[in-house]
Length: 296
Picture 1 (tube, one colour):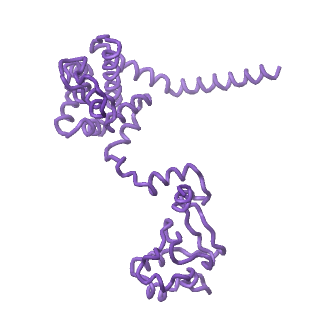
Picture 2 (tube, rainbow, N blue to C red; picture 1 turned 180 degrees about the horizontal axis):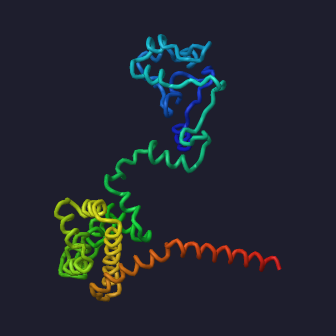
Picture 3 (cartoon, rainbow, N blue to C red; picture 1 turned 90 degrees about the horizontal axis):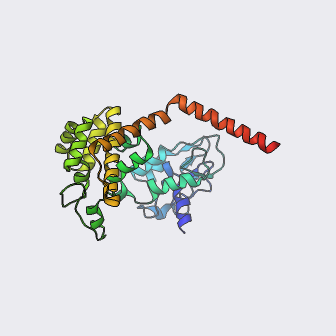
């Protein structure tokens, strides 16, 4: 039943003669829309097919009939549907693909965007600013979890029913939340001062209502280089928090900043064109050597 619901939701008719397509409850309008049998006056056209709305001699809509039968909005939808003379047979197409053939990939996409109500999952924000960062994927993932409210700080864990202390291990705060871990803890402020970003961070926090909004604001207004620095320092602060909580190791702010700087340097080296080219050449050489070895 679920599969049938998905397939029907993604199907639409390509109109040929129109003789096999019922006017009601079939996805023949734009983007697979249909005229419901609950539409006022629908009982008059219950057993009719859409060729009864067409001028068959030149394959066009009979505007007079269409406007006489339907309300203005439905009539306009019908009259704006193109009728292509070269298409002779009625056939079902998969609307999520240009070639009209069903693919699991586009079926999933269709479910997420159209068929299933996922509005509660969507949050407005500068998400592209996260995904376009020139940093390792784990840094982007951390920022995404922060902005989605699912980073496991102790306060967040307590909200989810996990029994744990709420104090932040790196300072005297009784609440380990995003603000204290990344921004308001004296240690975090010391780190931001070392990066030269504390002024920008303070400004963003003062003029926004949440950590999420502050991060979006910073990513929108900082240069690509500074956004890179911001995001890797945030990642390094979270790394510092985990080392403190799980290993009971105390780091200095210099170590936290240096770890972020090294991450940027390593990522840039790994993604430099000459490095990528040499890596590709090495892989091809290895493949060739492997092939040669197996042939002997």
